[in-house]
Image 1 (cartoon, helix red, strand yellow):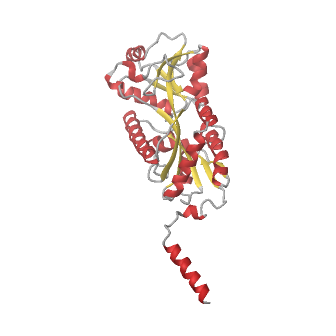
Image 2 (cartoon, rainbow, N blue to C red):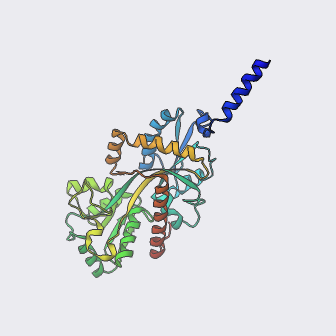
Image 3 (cartoon, rainbow, N blue to C red):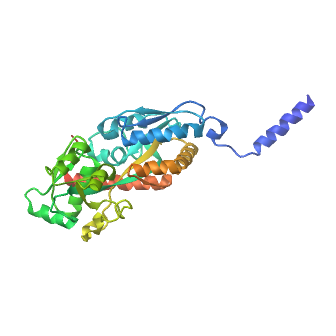
Length: 330
């Protein structure tokens, strides 16, 4: 009895001297329970594709499974609202985008969540600039040509987009807002039909992602006028940036569509740190880097604090553009 008492006393003293371990390190996370990776868009899109690529590698890294759950609607708002109400326990992740986590809060009257307060950022997967294109037979060869022509045409030049409130549309509105030049926005239901009408000459121009516009530029059907990134793209070194137009009002022009991963606000910091670390390892793998570049994305590497600051600036920028342009969700 005395021996057992001495042993128990010694063990208790040893335990008291050890530092407390984070909850997930003690085995409470992950427990083997499946993690839900909620995609707020239909299957087959960029957010869905990225989610599936990441989840296939993240599950084994965490010793559990990661299940994709598609909840599309309202530009990502429906699925994001569902994710915002999930338990902050590390078992729900959300694929967020420039739409769901920067634009929609100013575009829709009620989205049911706050893109910043309702979530904690985990990882910025990558960014994707857009490029201004015109038909190959268009007389416009520079951004100055486009702006001057739009000033002299009644209603301004026509510009297609994948729909009201999309990054293509808002890039146009930002250009109009900063340059003071008016354009006529022509919304379509998707990039496919929109860019075909630019190729066919029914619409003067369009901003679209390098993923969509790139092949048509390479085939000679479209002429690239300017890219929305701060620096020229390695894939299009001869295409100037919008900021290179020479207009003082456009010197800081930059638009980057982006993909990120969030968790519900209140998720423990050790869990967020573990997810951030594991996902960064996955994204750093050469095959993943190749896939991102294949999507026309520029890989990103930000801390969670940097992502939060970036998102805040994006929310503020698009709120200003949407208000100035008087844009209403359809």
